Image 1 (cartoon, one colour):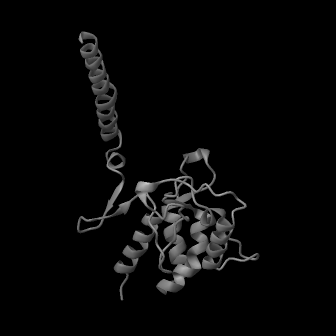
Image 2 (cartoon, one colour; image 1 turned 135 degrees about the vertical axis):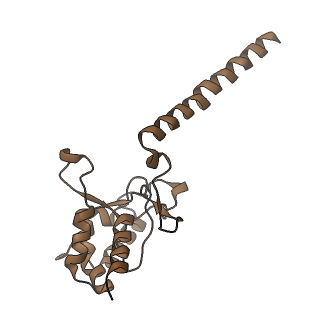
Image 3 (cartoon, rainbow, N blue to C red; image 1 turned 45 degrees about the horizontal axis):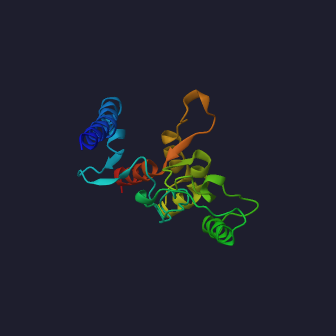
Length: 189
């Protein structure tokens, strides 16, 4: 009996140290180093309600908004994961055709790869600057603004995720759409 009690004490002590203690230590360090990220990168509206997360994609479908990468999990944050479909899958091929048709892409105007393919987790909140610029004509027409206005917003928000070590720039879709809405609200009528 004493062997069982000793074993239970070791299990309980190990759980407290390795599970609760370690999790508390990592969360505390994250709160010190990056408080916004530790809270999930929540993005708030002016009135204080949460409009999304800077770290999780949302499905924008209106023509006046930038559209994110496709999602194999239908943008459900609790179901992050990619598709296990083979490149030869008829369902994947059909999804690709639908995406290309949605963007109006063709051989003369090919769709950037990141707009056609889901990310590994299916929740990537960013698109390439090329993918954003590809969408400018549709968004400018839907918002009835000059394309250079939308391009300027893309240029302002695009960044290199690896700093000087990466060539390609990316941009957060939620940040883009919020900036466009804010510019439209601030514009004189």
